[in-house]
Length: 298
Image (cartoon, rainbow, N blue to C red; front, side, top):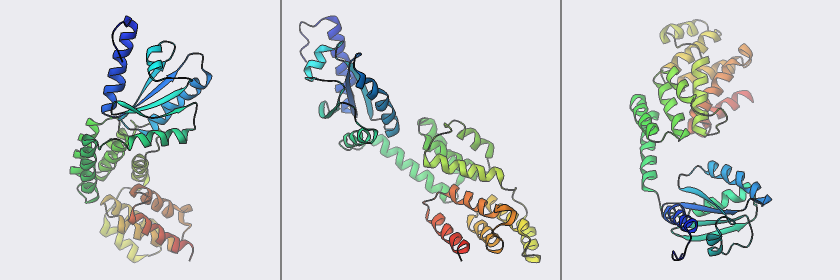
């Protein structure tokens, strides 16, 4: 854009466009939404854009709103003929656009298509690598190391709700129920993130399961009376307290096989909470659910 013979207002608009659109598009996708105060469809699109951008959750997506009546110079540069019109700017140039109001699914696909054009983000790659290492430590029984690493990641990225979920699980593995509860309290109740839901299931299990008792004494009670399901359920809790989900599941499945309706299905409910806390897609959970189905439908 030429900068000669511009009014002060036009010069400010050009500076804003250069900073917030052209320069920002060198680091990510900038969605330039052309609008007008008199435009009804524009008012429909505005909240949809906000909602979908938030749902995509990428720090590499930003939005710049330009009123065509207030910024005629920029509107003319883009040859805007109707509003709303949205341009995607990547690498300092427009790469795609749409006119009018589109569906939420179409808008999300539009944004994700532009994100795919970007080169990998080195900082994001480093974060994911560190997260993968922390989760490997957690699954390997190194809860203290995992909690320290996840806590550091969360302090650096406080808006990542998945990190809150992973950190809460690490605290639960350390027996720090109050700490896990406090961490999860930061997340909105309607959050659908898988890591948060998994952590909430683990917290519910830790809060409702009986405190782990003496394994040897409980095993002796079960050996003396295999029908003592209360002792076997307490034994499962004791194994859970020690991080042995395999033996905990074995004990719970044994109760279900003997009396699936014991205490109104208490053993089944505890087992399902355990499965959810591990993660429904985890191979261990898949295998355990298969064992449960074999018992229930035998």
